[in-house]
Length: 179
Image (tube, rainbow, N blue to C red; front, side, top):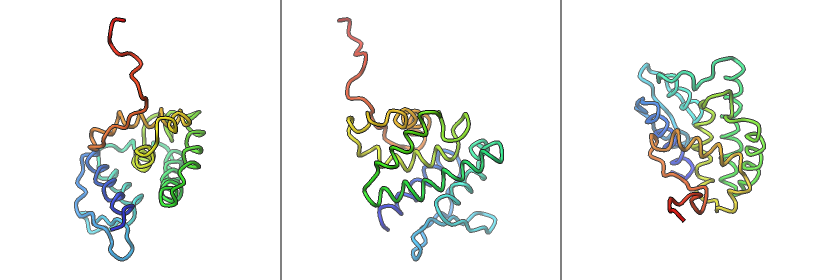
């Protein structure tokens, strides 16, 4: 196991937990180092994105897939962005471009696709989680839009996925004292 492959497995287990479905026979392909899900109907699904989409298909939360062909295509684009850009930026230890790009996009959007969270938001939240864990408060202040989105996603998903909450401000704005 390399660190990133174990992380993908953990992310898929977190997604399955959130969706209320079994991750069943989820294994890491030893040769290719990718997640593989052996579904109950004899189907074998390979790779982070394909397994994530299969888990959503097994769930009751179909709205995560998008409601129109355009939304589904946009979700697929963001899922590809996650694998190609976010994961690579973590391996190369250069996350500034990903943060800058997602921050710019989210300056005009609440979610990555449409008007409610989709699989794109969940998979990007899980991928960006590793980036946000390592950012200082000062660094987070440079990316206000992606931080707003992340904080929103964290409030929706962190507890159900057993993720530790990441702090976004050093001090409470209101301390509750009467001074």
